[in-house]
Image 1 (tube, rainbow, N blue to C red):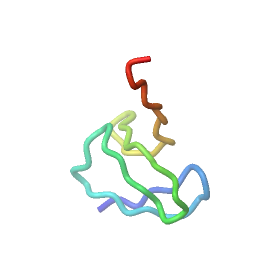
Image 2 (cartoon, one colour; image 1 turned 120 degrees about the vertical axis):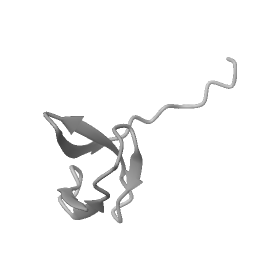
Image 3 (spheres, one colour; image 1 turned 180 degrees about the vertical axis):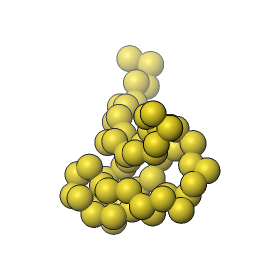
Amino acid sequence: MVNLKCPICGGEITVEDDALPGELVEHECGAQLEVVKQNGKLSLRLAEQIGEDWGE
């Protein structure tokens, strides 16, 4: 397990060691976060919010 900080509120989040880049986690503050791997280390960033297209 890896302890990371939420980039929004600074709270602690525990992520599995085998978490894959692109995996989404939700923090208790309500933030949707994406796991990223930089220089072999895991970190978190705010996940992109993609709106529905509905073919328009």
